[in-house]
Image (tube, rainbow, N blue to C red; front, top):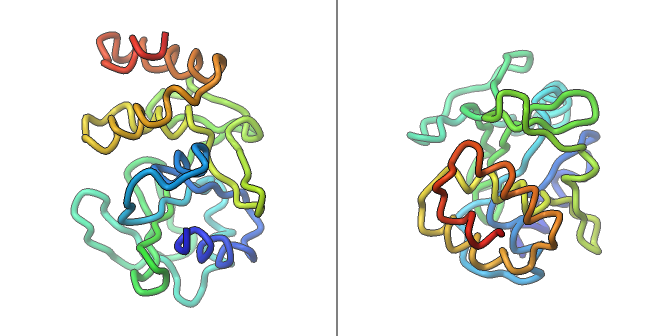
Length: 191
């Protein structure tokens, strides 16, 4: 939790919306640390990149290739794409590495970048907040991202929190996995 506290303090001056994402978001939802984490993913809206650039100037985040880890300088104003483009802070700035994941949006809606604009939810509905005021991604959204992978940790994350999902969250997740992956092994558990 030390890493999350450091992120919360660092983002205190950031005027845009942000969310703790990935496995940490599921830990916050479950109200316990379920497994070790190697980094912290922070989701921000791609439309707010100017706010990111204005807030985080020293050091400025770099653009990181999520497949290779290779980083290059990021110039404010440079367009970045939700999904393939990730911003990284220097690894020694936080207790564990922090990465900024970009989210597509449309007005007051978050839009799943892999859903061709058809999978969306209001920004308020994807936002949960800890008692200390740390915003994190709703579990059905974190799990939707994880559903496209067959990594063991993503499957374990699903099984750790699936029974904690209420009926609307379970139904939403089921209805957004099934059309694209009708044989997905999570679907039977979500019914």
